[in-house]
Length: 264
Image 1 (cartoon, rainbow, N blue to C red):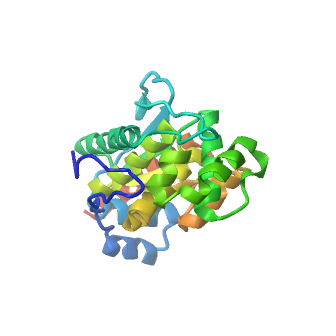
Image 2 (cartoon, one colour; image 1 turned 90 degrees about the vertical axis):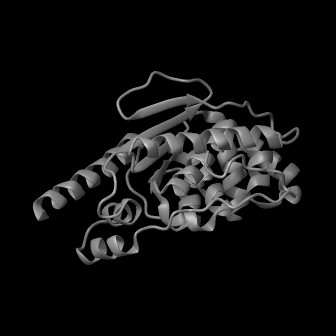
């Protein structure tokens, strides 16, 4: 789907993924109306006449039961210990990223406007700390010895965001990176919650710089890595858990549709 498989070798060229520009006119109108950060962001992402629904995507080591508006999937690859070597192979990262892009493509086909990404596993949080430290240059790995050891091993050899993902990431982070890229590719928004999803969003924005305008963050009080990544991305933060982030987006979509009906 889309641009096809994503080459992820640290020294190989890859085809660019075209990111759909946000609707600057709709965004400016929402800003002029004094709307909040979520509504202004949503106006740019979905436009004045775009689809009006959101979907929460949770990526972990095991699939879960589907619920209304929620997709729970297992990452298609299992990462290795990054303190002993690269966490994934080039092919494994490509598979995981393409899985995420395909999820976004299916969401676009279902008229979804915004995807909300989360990855709850502890191992992903540790990987996110290492990735956040690498991407932001901040000393964040002091509370996670494994992250510090992985950074010491791989830091000098990392070349670009895909190289960081291969060496330090996990399967769920790679899938969510693909979801973020696919969201931009299909003209959707990507709202991320938690350190792992924040790392995925930051990696995706490093791969395609135009993606940042389609990103929004769920605020995560006490999460230093996530906070550092949100600041690094310079995107607005919404609420403090994945469900609340999805609810905030859904509420903004409902308000938009109510305003549209009133003005019709």
